Each structure stands twice: as structure tokens, then as C-alpha cells.
Amino acid sequence: MHNKPTVIVQNEGVKYSVLMEKFLENFIKEFEDTEYFEDIFDFAVNAWNFANMKQILPEGESDAAINSIESDEIDFDLLNRMIDYKISNFKEYTNFIVDYELKETDGDPILNVTTQAQEQYLANMFDTMTEETDENDFDEGFINRTAIIIKHQQPFIDWRNNLYPEDIHKPIETNTYLINEDIEDIETWVKKKCEKIFIAELVGWNTNKKAWPQKRNYKMFKEWFIVDISTMIYDFELKPISKI
Image (tube, rainbow, N blue to C red; front, top):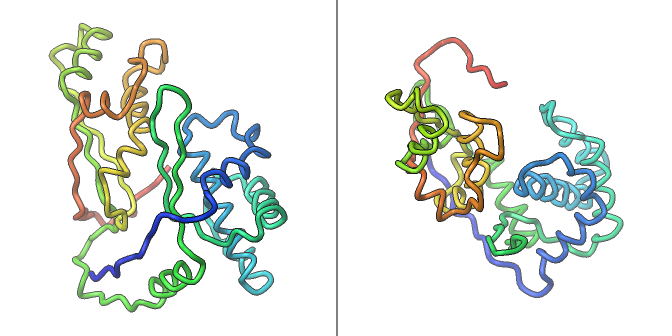
């Protein structure tokens, strides 16, 4: 498999982090039930980029692309309203958002945004779409995901044992999370998503938030968990994988 390098630079001039915050202001009440900051920004980034595509694609093609998304979890009405709002109010800002980071602080997290100019973004997308795939590059059963395996360290084990002393001798199974194989900087991705993973691990044992460790951050995450990475995932079964 041959992956072409993607040129990504931190945007200069206008701060797209400020633009994104202004963009979200009009819709923040729509995300009152959304637990993770990352999920809110992921949704907003998709809306922003779809809006940019809608401005340059022939009429109807962008709508077809949106409608082709297969997911019962996406609020398409909200997505389309945010797309229209972006075009109406931020039309002149044509950079595509390719990454962001929420930096932890004592107060609210600070948003940093990385963008690509329209021409570079489209060129990279075109290369990806037109690149011919050699089937011989893939082994049978290969799954195009990277696996993040979460192993529990002593602080997590102590937390579990304090909650359930009767289970003190029972091992804690590791959990595996599959992510996009194109993510190159796994450590940065984990740092961005550590709160989401942390909560997923806690919920597996106790859904009462009052029983969870407080003031969770990336430093605590590394103290509680070891992260192993596997980029080669295979499925030996013929039965299709089901995703709920």
C-alpha cells in the first residue's frame, strides 16, 4: 500500500479557530445533549467542509454526496442548516479544515485549527479518489483500520477494586478501538480523544459519574492506561462484521 504524503500547514492570517467558534455560536443549543467537545467540533468541521464543497461543485452534486452518507446517527437537518449558514455568513473563507486540537487549560479548552487552501485540499482529494489500488498489495482478510488497544494500569485497577472488592481477583479485559488507518500521528489523536476513551472505559464498569475520577486530563490518562497500536488488522471469518 502506498500512501501519498499530505501537505498540511497551520493556517496563517485570519484565525480559523475564531471563525469556528463564531460559526458554532448560532447552533450551540443544538448540542446540549452532546457529551464530548470533540463530537461537536467533528460535526461542525464536516458542515464547514461540505459548505466549501457546495460552493464549488455543480448544483446538486454536493447534496448527492451528503445524501450518500449512511448513518442513522447524523442529524441531516442540522447539518444542512449549518452548511447554508456557513455559505451565507462565511463564504469568503474557503480554506478546508483538516485538523483541530483542544488544548487543556484550567478553564475552557483552547481550540487550535489547521487548514488547507482550497487548491491543495482538492488536489489531495483527487489523488485519493483516482489512485488505482493494486489488489496484490492487500492480504486476504485485511481490514483498513488501525487498532488502539487500551490496557489498564494500577490506578484503574485500584479504582475498579474499590468499587467492586468482590471482583478483586478477576482480570480486566482490554478494549480495542478501531480508527482511520490514514491517521499518522496516533499519539496526537489519542491526546485529542483521551477524554472520550477514558469515559468509555469508566462506563464499562460504572455509569455513575460521581464514582469517576475527577479532573481527568491527558496526564491522568497516561497514568491509568497503556496504549498499544496495531496497524495490521485481519478478519479470518466469512461472516460479515456487524456494526451497531
